Image 1 (cartoon, rainbow, N blue to C red):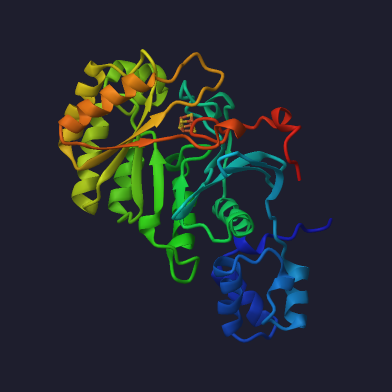
Image 2 (cartoon, rainbow, N blue to C red):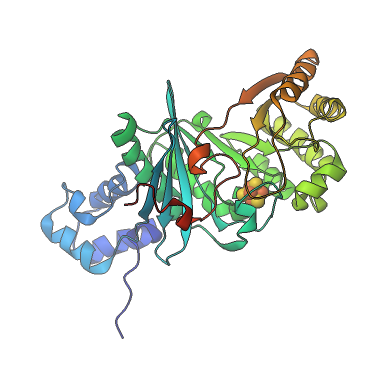
Length: 354
Ligand code: SF4
């Protein structure tokens, strides 16, 4: 029976070192190969031009690259680009590039689908298929980084883990991908340009604090009222607001970092002055900044709050000396905005398809 070749990025440094030794290669080849894989983002052995042809052939015989491929590429009128990627097992995930005058941000997925079923989120309706391996998370970055150069003439400057899935339910792979993106032997990006967004998995946040997490932490809060939160985000049934508050205090104590709260404005659900008052009280426990996000209509029954309601809500929070930013959604016309990522290939058949 023919043995399936492993993806070179899946095998450990020790195994690769052993392979090189067994093939009579010098130890420094390991460093060169690692640089090609994680710094330069090679997608095939032929790109590794400082290796001998013989070594490249040996590597090709022993290993492969299970690269994800772009099956759809959709550009919004505001410059945002959404990619539908096909994984080696034919599963689909999505990633987004979001340009602004001073940066190019990418939004990465961490799971195929999501098990948490937040009511306002299109991905939540897909159900959960599997976790992404760290190489698949990294590969999204790598492919979109090349695309960022094509579209905007510059590389990705910022990364948010806000795509499909809950990153803290795929802890080890997400952490490994952040390490590859932020260490000098990897992509070398500053940790301050990477943000992990979670619905508030308390066990995972404690682990981040204990592991000396250096990137930014954003919490999809969306309500500081336990009953409302339970209704729109079922995960709250086992990760209560009180537990979340306690673990965030712990996180801030350990890391000294300011937390970001993401708050989607849902008309008639979480946008009253009473909701703003509860949010202001909840924020008293630690340094926070609040991102108010306009809601992107999906197939759910929620509606975004009217502008006047948003303005009143924001003014109230500011009157309590809280730092508040209003985040205008990008890529709504291609369903690339927050809460809109879902595999929906048919809808895009008239769009640019690769
Ligand atoms: S908002 Fe995030 S955690 Fe909730 S269902 Fe969507 S992808 Fe999952």
